[in-house]
Image (cartoon, rainbow, N blue to C red; front, side):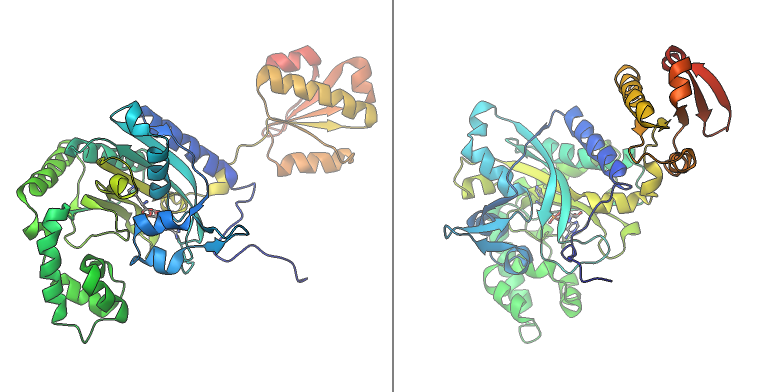
Length: 416
Ligand code: HAM
């Protein structure tokens, strides 16, 4: 093949025979989130790099390895957003949204960018949808967030959902836990990777998120945060679990779930399904009660989650092309006069009857246009030539049954 320019590794073209499922799901998500009173927010695709360093955390894989960052002509360090939470929090603070109402509930859909190794369900540009609820510190808010995404997956018939949940406590609880982790992992100092050694000093919770097999074996025997939670954190976590039970949502407590971003506190969760292979996380989220303050706002308890659209489509396991809408009518025009005439009728059918109507603009033969109508799987073909215009009677072919009838123009409109 000629040396053509291709798309960047880890990105994808969603071709026109695949876009209907995307539109369907995007609409579904808009409707679902709106029903819970969440309003859409749209933020820029790129931000000051500092925003992500200060929120996601210097030690995380996202910040150390995966960000698309560059310095622009004005010497500003910019980054394509690797996630939305930091941007939404920035906008929340910048536009003083907390002053408008005590509880602010926002959702989003759009591209995120991470330079990860591409594989099934993992891309470098991917679509995230998610939401962020600002203002409530109560466990009911945690349960609402989890219910919203769990019920979305259930409505879309996603099977074998596994909700993994943990509490990583407040700052206070984590002081003692950090020490316990440090003294545990210190025993294995010689075995740890350089990255974990660095994390051992500053951020030992990060080691629990290791992807290295022998470190994972060490993690299984590490102290559990649950044993270090203070009474308030324990109560909060237990209340979240009780509400989930009342909502009939099954969960598994995963004592070592810490998530790959540093801003979390208290509840963290992921929903997985076994149909995705190794990239099995459909979504993930948690509380981030300190982040708004950390980025310069007033202290605001908050919680949210984000989910991957590509992974949702994979988990649905459907033939995405089979969902495409087929046109209602293909107008086969024979001759210049017929094309002009058929364009007018087509518009009438579109406006008055809301139909999808195709006009041939290649001036092809009857046979070629009929072939094209078949390829597009249209419901009806309407044949128009000079005689038909003169006699005002047209030939309408039902492409499913093969039946043909002679029909007057106004009757065609009545048919639909
Ligand atoms: P995250 O776990 O990094 O969380 O990403 C959320 C979801 O995005 C994942 O569960 C997965 O479905 C999808 N995802 C992540 N990376 C990729 C990728 N490379 N390719 C395809 N899909 C991917 C966050 O982003 C947090 N901001 C979630 C949050 C919101 N926490 C609180 N509020």
